[in-house]
Length: 230
Image (cartoon, rainbow, N blue to C red; front, top):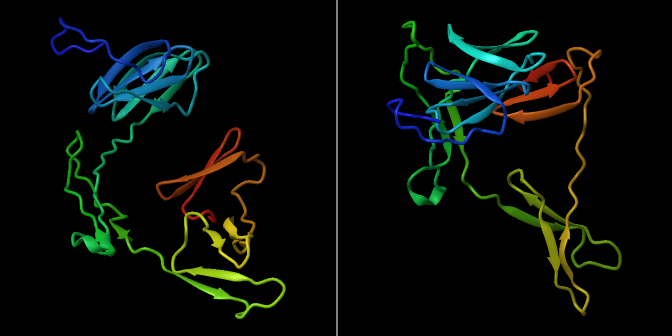
């Protein structure tokens, strides 16, 4: 529940159904922990909550949470967990198509204002301060292995000017009653190259990609890579 005056209270929805037992506020974020489930949820306003992951689990969940030195410390039976919020801010930038007269393709430079932390330290400039605007539609050229085509296989090739999110389908209206409708086109095979992981002794189980970084997990270890190679 939340209240502006500790007298009138309003029920709110938690991020998930858990045995939430302790809540704390620090550096613009509310954080709550649950007993017996190793769960933590955070909120910027005490109203809208998001589940977070505790990297180091307590034996029997967490009983309370505190904040200090920029960190939330959740403690329970057996061990404690350090939860450092990302302090992430976002801005929805509207990229229009190239012919709208508002934005054109190219490199956009992003700058942020200087900010101070609670200790008065000034932030550094971002390292990835540009992004590419790409609103040009891909063009395609069709080519044929033979024209006029004789008896046998006729290979029809579609060459696009840009990489595609998904391959096209092809339809052919040919003489007679048997036409081709929305048939899948085959793509050339990719070349796979084995890359060494930092340690072969771990059984790597899964991998994902987001925000410019690859993350791979094993039963008890996590590795990251900016390019899937290193």
